[in-house]
Length: 238
Length: 238
DNA sequence: CCTATTCTCGTACACTGTACGTAAAAACGA
DNA sequence: TCGTTTTTACGTACAGTGTACGAGAATAGG
Image (tube, rainbow over all chains, first blue to last red; front, side, top):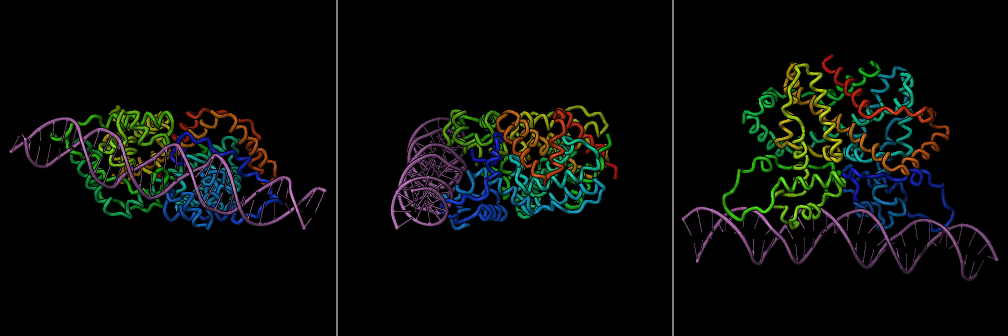
C-alpha cells in the first residue's frame, strides 16, 4: 500500500515514532537528520506536489543514498507523518488568547487555513492521515485552551477541534483546486464551454441560471471568513 | 505519476470525457464497457481501499487485459473521475423538496454523508479531484433547486454547495479514520498509551484534562447532525 | 475484396517502495 | 590496543506501478 489515497491506512505506531530515546551514544554518527530529511520532503511537496515526494528525490535533495533515509523514517508513510507535524510547527501554538472563545477559535481556524495555503498538499495529506507529533499536539493544546471558556467537557472539545480542522481542510482543498484551475486558463475555458453545453440541454435549468448570472468575484478570504463565522457563531446554541 | 495525493493535479478535459459521440458504427465491437470497468474499480475500492485500484487488478476483475482498459479511460486519473461520478449516481437527484431550504439542504448533506460512508475512499478522492459527470451535475442541479428559496444569486449558491460538500467530506474523512482505529484495538491502545505519556509530561494540561474526562460516546450520526445543523442554521443570517 | 476504423492485448520501459546484505564508523570492555 | 557491539550508509535486487508502442483481430462501407 502506497499511502496517499488509501482508505485502509492504519497509521504508524506513535510510541515508536515520537518517543525515541534521546541519543544512542554508540555506533556510527548520523550523517543526516530527521529534520533535514523532513524539510527536504516538505520543500519538494510545496514546489511540485505530493506526488513529487519520492524516496529517491528526497534522498537526492538531501545528498543521501535512497536507503539511508530508512534510518530516519521507517517507511514512506512515516515520512509523510513527519512532514505533517513539521509544517504544524509553523502554527502559533502559544499565541495570547483574548478570552472570547469565538474570537480565539476563529483565529485558530485562520491559522490553519494560512498553513494549508502555504502547503497546498496538506489537506490531501490530512484526509487519510493525522499526526500526533509534538507540534500538532502543541497546537491542539492551544486550541483546547481557547475552548476552555465554553465549559464543554473534554470529549466535546476534542470533537469541536477535529470538526473545525476537517472544515478548514475541506475548504482549502476546494480553494486550492479552484486556484489551480485559474492558473491554467485553457482548462478553465474548456470547462466553461462544457458546462455551457450541459446547461443548454434543458435538463439543468438551475445550473443554467447559476452560470448565466454575472460572476461575482468574491475573494476566497471573504468566503472563508463568512462560512467560518457562520459555523462558529452557531456553536454553543444548543 | 501515481496521482493519489498530488496537489498539482490539473484534471481531465471534461468535453472529451463526458461529451463522447454516441456510438461509432465502425470498427471492432467493444468487448467490455466503461460502466463495467468503473463498477469493478468501485467495488475494489470499497473492499480494499483506493490503493487496491490498480489498472492490473481492475483488468483482472473485469476479465480484460491491462491495456484494454485504455480504450475506455484515457488514463488512471480519468478512471478515478469516472468512479466518483459513478457512485454519485446513488445520490437521490430527484427527491421531492419540502420548500424549506434549510431542511432540504440538510437532507442533501445527509445523502452526501451516507454515500461517503458507503464508499469511504470518496473523501480522499474528492480532496484532489472533482467530477463534472452527469450524475454529479444532476445532484448539483438538485441542490441548486433546494437553494432556490434563499434568493441567493448563482455564484453564491454554487459556493454554498461547494462549501457544504467540503464540510461533509472533511467530516466523513475524520469519521472513517476513527472507525478504522476502532477496528484495530491494538493501534488504539498504543495510541492511548502514547497520549497518556504525553499528557503526563506536564506541558499539556488541557489535553490531560480532556483525556481524563470520561469518554462520552456520542454516536457519529448525532455529532454530524449537530454540526450540520449549526452550520446550516447559521446560513442566511448576514 | 479492399480499406478504414476500432478494439484487444503482449511486450517493454521508466519509475516506485523497500528487503537484504555488506561495509564503514563510532563507543565500550578487555 | 584490540576485538565486540551497535549504529548508520548504501549498493543491489525485486515485485509492482502506469502506460507508450505496435502488431493482430474484428467490424463496416465502398
